[in-house]
Length: 409
Ligand code: HEM
Image 1 (cartoon, protein in one colour):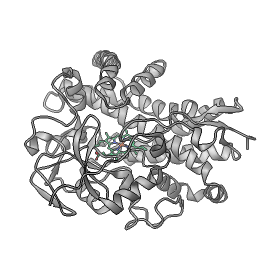
Image 2: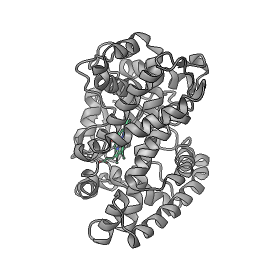
Image 3: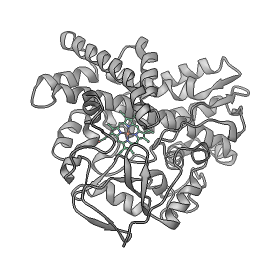
Image 4: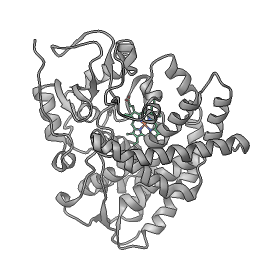
């Protein structure tokens, strides 16, 4: 059977604002389709919940390291790109067993439930401090003043990066999530170089002056030689910064907007604070900040929904679409903070299941709870069609969210 070719608009403002019609089309017309993705090229887009679960969980048949599927290099990496790009993109998310187990083992403990639970008072204090600043304005950009600084402060504190350097990080990380075109990559390079130089200087400092932070722990693992080499150290910290920051910014931004746009759900949460945990899960599902998981490569030819996916082909697991599969979720384009069960895949699944899931969940619960308690009348300052979304492929989030705070509780 010949491949079903489809074209989906995955970056326009209208898609980002309301992706549900596109998800419906994927499910109805082609749950497994051949499509052209900017920068990656030809790829399979897989959107049904069950197939996406198979891609995420079946580590024998679907691998992350292209070499394990007979490909020379990762999709999207070209000969003209500097070596640094290869180094930084060669991290645990792109590795298979046994490398993945070794790398993840170095950071698993720091991100485990107990370690993260210990951060709760600090995250609450950071949240309240930011809300104090927000409260000084009548109208404010919630992304710039709340959704972005909260996760950035948290991940920088966990790694042990100085407070005064955070504005630099914001600029670098934002520059790195540009449109995935050749020009976009070229524009990213200065930020990549500056960030690399900066991180190497931080590593050097920790070698002479160890502290009680994650960078020191990783530098010590590097010094143990067989556990982490210098390039792995760099790509690990890079991954933690990017994965731990941008994703959470988007959840807090789009999640706040979704609650404001669904007054009945917002009112339920205000009436019953114990709904905060299921509300955060539903906001993860409904907003799906990571729209596509990273590319998987089949190790052998496989047939999915009647389509033959060849060894080494690129496959994109469409997490956002899977989270709206009507066979898995009733009324998937409805926000329902009491939804049960809610087995969404917004944080992935299988061996690459989000390392920061405890942290992301805790940040989200604290942020949504305190934000809406403090500003019970807060509303967007612009009509929905004027609110700008970022045009990044594969990540869904707001460029900004101007709000009127209303009366303070
Ligand atoms: C709302 C926030 C977040 C979302 C939606 C999210 C989503 C995801 C998803 C979908 C994956 C799996 C990707 C794949 O299988 O290709 C993943 C992996 C990962 N996430 Fe998160 N994430 C979030 C927050 C965080 C935070 C706070 C950190 C902390 C550093 C983090 C670190 C990572 C890392 C290191 C991986 C790779 C794990 C591995 O390869 O074993 N994430 N995340």
